[in-house]
Amino acid sequence: MDKQKKKIVTAFVLMLCAAAVVLVVYYVITRQSKDTGEEKEPGTEVEKLLVKDLDTKYPETPAEVVKLYWRFNKCMYNEKMDDEEFEKLLEQLRKLYDEEFLAREENSWENMLSSFKSDREDYRKNKRNIAMYSVESNSSTVYGEVDGKECAYVMCNALIKQKSERTKVYEKFMCRDDGEGKWKILGWEQLDSQDEEDSEEK
Image (cartoon, rainbow, N blue to C red; front, side, top):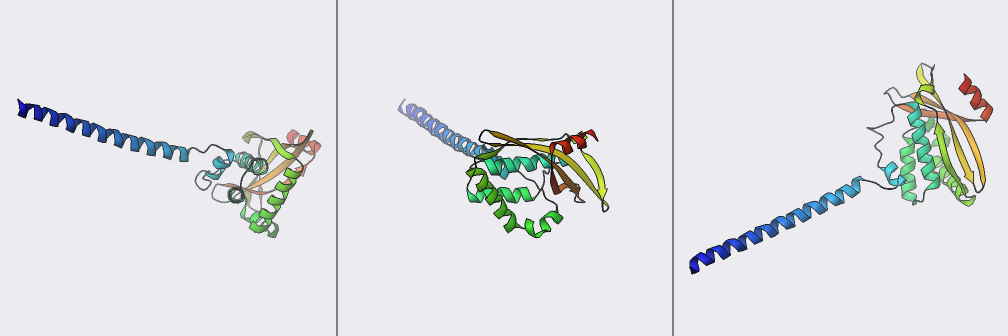
């Protein structure tokens, strides 16, 4: 009887040890999966834009490129962030620009960073922000050819809020195919409301 009891007790102890090991392994795996999941799911707009992979998942149409341009600008001017995040967002934004646009001296990294920081500071001092923006649909985009390269013209507007004042800004963006199927921003011009309406009628 004693030997039989010892065998039963030993088997029971071994089962408890095995169960404890299984529980510990399960806890560790679950914890790692949770931590990894948190890293892959950015919460703030700053984090979402920073993790965007514009090399492999670039916007497919000129209108989508302009929408993303405004999304970056709204975030950079309105959201709170440190200098490192601001610079990384600008690096992301510059991926939307045409090489010819970036080659201009005023659009060098140093000049653009200085200009953005100055504008951002001006927005803060004057309590100004980009309240909203609207970009025309893909079907309304006008296509053409300039110097043998396919170009597209996209109309948009943004509502700028400063304290109790509201100002609507109209702009026409020109995008150009970079030869690899990506539409890059070559430039833009500001329009008054009448110009914008005339363009829509055409």
